[in-house]
Image (tube, rainbow, N blue to C red; front, top):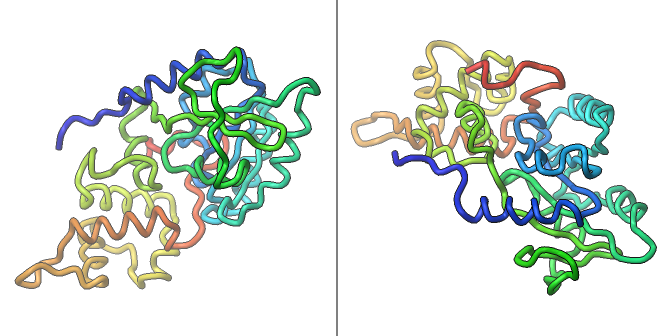
Length: 277
């Protein structure tokens, strides 16, 4: 595998643009994955910390445990943020829109920025807020050039690139790949990722959904379990050898898309997830 580039040029450029916007934006909407709200927080928040009001949207609420997501909402609210847990596929953003319009200055449109790491649902949220056919706005007076702005009802919304923290623990990136927020194939084989995820699921005691879906018990080594998964899926190579790479890929895709039921990988005030690896 080649060297992983976690911080490509367009992401660095987007970060610089948002830094320049910090004094002109009224508040931030940060999108996180409800299954791992701490792990999926955006490194861009450091730019705005203690300067701008932050609304946290816990997306993919349909894939998380509702009681745990409610814990996170209460925890984040106590941290001075405004938090909501949403299933963005259902388009239930009416409360969020009300919260936004309530903050509008009387003399101009409100200016917002949406931030989030890759694949947490940022684009879906933007579509829900401004409409799928919303036109890009031209230059906004007094605001940095090169930023994509969309017009909503009473507000202007700046998009930002999905940025992963290049300095965070690489084990954190591996867990993010399991929920679809980084490219697992870039930082290792699907087989190795799957075996590590299997071990993680057993340690976190979140195996029951997989057993219910595929009928596989967490018995034997992680290699044994992945072989059982491959056999269950019928992923065989010539000679009857189980294709562990393809089996691992299918397993990880099923994990990321919630095929094993609702899961919450972390709770407030727990130690970092990657310490389990």
